[in-house]
Image (cartoon, rainbow, N blue to C red; front, side, top):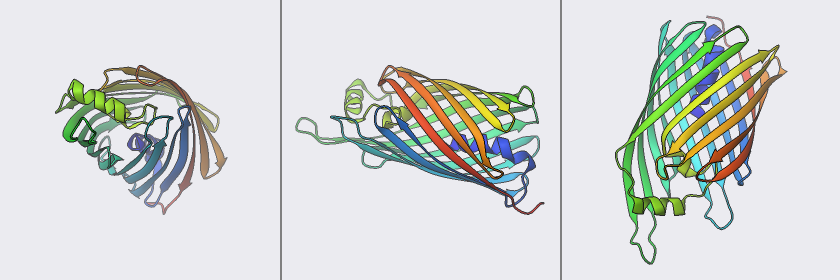
Length: 281
């Protein structure tokens, strides 16, 4: 999610922030199943240890012989570091209001030094899913929620090498019965960017970052299990970040998913980041 990308940016820039410092980012991602997404990210330093962050994203999936879906995502959050303990809180909206969407509340408590960052994460998701009426089915709206609990960590192994680990487990109020499962699977298109990929039972991620001069490589591996279908997806991604100027970077990403649900999918992304300095505090 864009929320987690904003957190990653904060870890990079917040140690020496002054009031008015900001990061602006934007990019696109596409996959081999005709999925396309675009997003914007903004982080603003309110003080040396307080950041306001927000993002908005839109994705579209239009596979053959299946209805297209347009998904919106937006979040707003605040982060304050009391040194060495910090807190984050935020709210988010995700989904397609005609099919499946959710209102989310997010919170984290973390401990951070120059070498290590450890975080306990919580996420509450309030879902609404609309099953349309057909000749054989009168239609139905499912309202359910999920509580997610997770841990994340970042270790700066050297000045140029970092290791990040994270995991999240969700507990749903509705087990989404088999009859509904079949209808959900029929309605939601299958792609890396499809709606169904937000209904996860658990997720785990590991990333190794390498700084080479002014450039940065990141190698990420992840896996998640779907709550509806019970299938698992494993993913591998390589990202490369390099400066465009003294105040801007460009990041390229290339990855591959191997999914029980939608098979093998290749994806590519490009992001631009712009950095601005406020007044020294």
